[in-house]
Length: 480
Image (tube, rainbow, N blue to C red):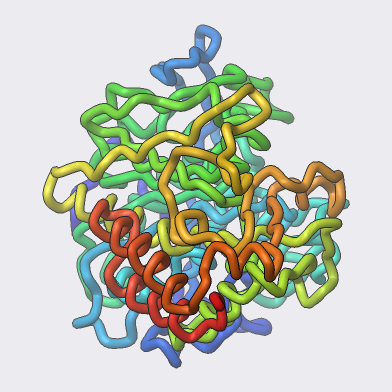
C-alpha cells in the first residue's frame, strides 16, 4: 500500500459491484472493452466527507486557506477500465472527475483521450464526485436519456444504497477516492500497484478540478501526482453551495503556483472566448504548462460523433477527416442538432500528446513545451489569417494544410440549451479554392505531411497518430 497524507480520512471500498442491469455510465465509449484488451468493473466508496469554508474571501491567485466546516456521510461509485493483462499496465492511473453538465455522469475526457490511454496501458477510473451523477438533475439534457433520476433512479437494484450529501462535499469525496485507490490498490486495481495518479477534469469538471487544486491540492500531495485541466473556463467552481453557505471563487481564478505538482492545462478556441478562459491565462512556471490549440472547439465531430465507437482501427479517423468536407450538424444519433456544422478540427490528437507529455513530466521531472498562444484581436475575437483561421496557438494539420475553416466560435446560437455554441463550426472550402490551394493530390499530401511532422517534432502530436493522419490524407481525394 502506498502512503497517503494522514490528514485524508480513510474511505471504505467495496466491490466489485454486481447486480442490477450492470454498470450505468451513459457518457462513455460504447464498444466492448474486451476488443481492445480491457475490462471494466465498479466499486462503491463510502465514508464521511467534509465541506469547507474560508475565513476570508477567495482570491484570484488561488492560494486559499480553507477549513473544515461540516461533515456528512456519503456513498458513491468508481468505474474502472483496466488492461486484462496486468503486464500491459504502465503504472499510471488516470482518475476522471465525471462530468455532469448534461445532468448525468459522462466520461468526457475518456471519450476524447481513450485511444492513448489504451495504447499506453493506463488504468482509467471515473469517479461520481457530484450529486447529479447519483440522483440526477431535472431539466437537463441527460434527463432525455433515461437517467433523469440519476443512477439511483435508473437502476435502484444496483445503486439504491448510494447517497450524496451535495456538491459542497465533492472535493472531499474526490480526494478520498484518490486516497482509496492507493490504499486499496490490491482490490480496485486487482493486484497491480499504481506508480502515478493523474487527476483529470474536462469542462465543468475542469472547473471543479481548479477549485480542488486551489483548496486541497497542495495538501493532497502524495495522492495525485499531476493534474490535467482540460477545457476550463475563467473561474473555478463554488467551494461551498446550498444548502451550505455559498462561497464562490472570483470571476477570474488562477491555479495556485505554490503547489509542487505538475499541472497541464489544455485549451481550445471555444474555451478562451466562449467559456471565458482568456483572463485566466497563466505564464509557465516550474509546475504549470498550458497548450492552446488553433481551429478547435470545446467538443467536435470526433468527440460528439465518432469517439464512442473508436477502437483504433482507423475508421473513426477517416470519418472525422471526412467531416471537414461532408459536414455534420447533429449528434446523439441525430437527437440533438445545431444550426451550423459542428467543428471538425478533432483536437483528440493533440490531447493525446498532452496526456503523454504530462505523464512523462511526472516520471522525469522535465516539463513539456509551453505552446504559443492564440492571437487575440479583442475580448470577443481572434486575429484571423486570410483563410479565416485563428492565428497563433498550436497549428494542427487541419489549420496548417486546411481543406475547410474549422473554428471554435462559429456558432453563436442558443440551440440545445446553449451547448451548440461550444461546438464551433466548419466551413468547407469550395472545389475551386481546393484546386487553387492543391493543384494535385500530391501537393496536398506533402503539405499535410509537413504539418504533421512539424507538430511531432514539437511534441504536439504522437508518432502513432502521425502515421494515422498521414495515411488518412494519402487515402483522401483532396487535390487536383
